[in-house]
Amino acid sequence: MFIKGDTEAHHGLEHQGVYIYKPARSSKANEPQQPKRRKLAHLSETTPRDDELPFVPLLDGKESSSLVKRRHDAFTDFWSVQSQRIQEILSELDSKAVKDLADFINQAGPERRGF
View 1 (cartoon, rainbow, N blue to C red):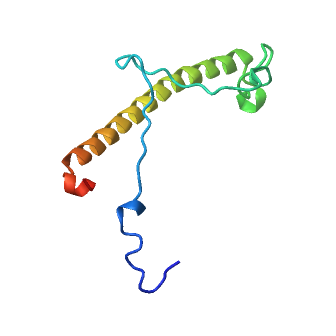
View 2: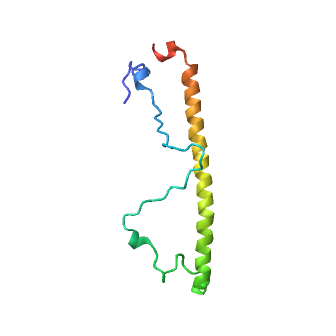
View 3: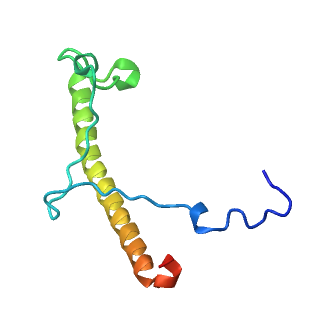
C-alpha cells in the first residue's frame, strides 16, 4: 500500500532484509561429507522385498529381473557419486557466501554500521 507523501517510510535500517546463515556442524572439516539420506517413517512399506524388482522392467516387461537389478545397482552407484558432487558444490557456495558476507561486514566502516 502506498500513501502519498510517505516515500521515506521504508528506507531506514530497520526495514532492510537480513541474510541468516546456519552452517552445518562438522566435527571433521577435512573429511568429505557423506550424502544425506531421507528418513522414512514406514521403512518396511517402501523397501522392496526380495521378490520385487526395484525398477519396472523395460522392453514391454521382457527385461530379465537380473538386468533390472543390475540397472538399479548402476543407478544407485552413479547417483551416490552425483549426490556427493552436488553436496560439495553446495558446500563451496555456502562457504563463498559466508566469506563474501564477512568481507562486506569487515569493509563497512563503523559509521555504516550505526556505531
